[in-house]
Length: 268
Ligand code: CIR
Image (cartoon, rainbow, N blue to C red):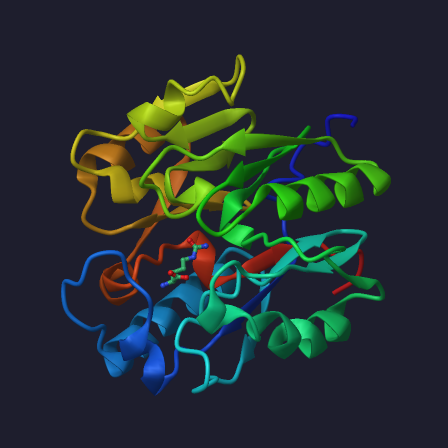
């Protein structure tokens, strides 16, 4: 695949979904208390505003009470300039989210395809760089799904590589993000994984692993508030940051990338 500068961070549009009241039942690995739905919606509103201020047109979908984790729209789909791919989330309570988001994908894309086969991929396991797409195997993304997804991406002209997400990490992107321009932000374990080749890596500070999940959106990097050393390291690497509260999302293992699908379309 040819290097396409900005593929991983130059966007025109995003899709988000308002957190439901049922978000208090969202899945979590460790229980530190339920998220508060009203506070979650307040944080979500600031998130949508930040995407808009970064230049995106944001489709905010209505809350879905039947799917507590459905505000994490990154997981049931993956978007490229050529079209959208409906994925198959790898946990039972989120299975229906792919069907639920399909109309929103069809509203923006002429081409919407389903992940072939019966394997599973969560979008949180997919890291798009400017010259390759990395797919992490995890408790949510299995070999069959990752293989079928890599095959589809290859058919669309992209390079894809399947990687093993480190043990105990929910999603591949829980532990790393692209800052763009061939710079990766990663936890120490991820940085030492070898997945990123010769790219420059900014390592998150000890005790700040949650801050490895950020999003570069056009000229800014959205960073969770409360991780000052990581923010300083991102700024020292030459990137402008915008801080956002993610306290409620964090209670159910969600981060900034999970809350939107971001993509570039030719016309707005
Ligand atoms: C879940 O466990 O599926 C949700 N509570 C959190 C999903 C976070 N999504 C992501 O990292 N892409």
